[in-house]
Image 1 (spheres, rainbow, N blue to C red):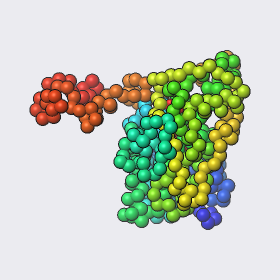
Image 2 (image 1 turned 90 degrees about the vertical axis):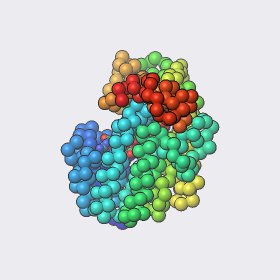
Image 3 (image 1 turned 180 degrees about the horizontal axis):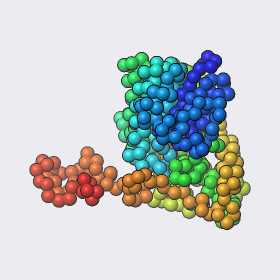
Image 4 (image 1 turned 180 degrees about the vertical axis):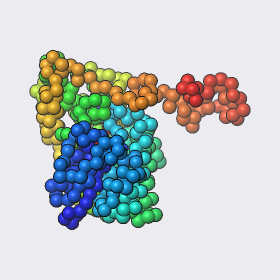
Length: 394
Ligand code: NAD
Ligand code: GDD
């Protein structure tokens, strides 16, 4: 990337956006940063950037804001999204889907401004759920996103927006680039409050145990679920490489070091110098049973893949969360942060991260509900009986 370009980063008040802004500023570029959060809630504030903060100046659902920030830009990094770990995305599917507004308006504004590059942050949540049913999963290759059966809500929105990038490139000539991030972690990320992902949540819970002296930990699921986790420095490097490459298709950006959640806890315990009594919360949000990144393509294209070991990345993350934690909690109050919460949106769905009604909406797998058209019927003539969704007054 030549010197002194103007780059727009949305979601810059969040985890990855904050690190990306630091990277581009240190490389001598002009950074236009936007986030719906007020500036005092940004994870990192870079005074050298032009910061558009808060619901009036930084909400990228608003096309006027998108136009204002894209004017004169060379590159756009579309990271803004209403998202989080499993505790958030399983409970807030409608909110997750509304990120389609930020993506649509940002890509339109970028197109109008004639930018050189438009980078879109997609997710491993686009992958077909049927290919992630086993903890000993075969790593996911890019083609495994189709036929589409992504994570409900959040994954569908990501898959749709990926597709939009493709068609803006093909039809309008916008240089779009798309990376599918696999669970990113590191300092300056969300570590409590309901949106945190497993690496930060586990660090926090181990730290709570260390600080409180109460040597036990609650783990969501039975701990056998597997994931790969990518350290933030690898993520920033990958975004840069992919954006400035000729890679036109969505590509995995993730570590291929597969671990179980139990192994993740082992690592955090080792860093914290404790052994904890494990309690498994089986009804908590779990997501898929296994997920890993197949890095064949990124290796072929770039001769590179994320390589920070989980042990090394967790060490830095743990130390950072430890400082944040002890600035906020004491031995007496630490227990307040030992449980992970589920963040529910404005219309909470009953149940722990799972809407049973949704399950019965899929008549192609469940069959036509009782009371309609006879056994396995479907004539649609009989209207007796309780309609699907009736409970919620539809
Ligand atoms: P984050 O939540 O820390 O940052 C996202 C930021 O977007 C937040 O600061 C939020 O306030 C902002 N935002 C939300 N709605 C907005 C709006 N309407 N206008 C402007 N800003 C808005 O999340 P992150 O981990 O930094 O993720 C960045 C991107 O990467 C997201 O698109 C996310 O879906 C994607 N991603 C992240 C991961 C991960 O593990 N962190 C994995 C896959 C994909
Ligand atoms: N968040 C969280 N908090 N997860 C926990 C906890 C806890 O306290 N304890 C155990 N887990 C388990 C979850 O039940 C899940 O099975 C696993 O750890 C990973 O959870 P997350 O880190 O929250 O999410 P994910 O890996 O399923 O999905 C994340 O990564 C995607 C990209 O790979 C999410 O952040 C998605 O938004 C993201 O797109």
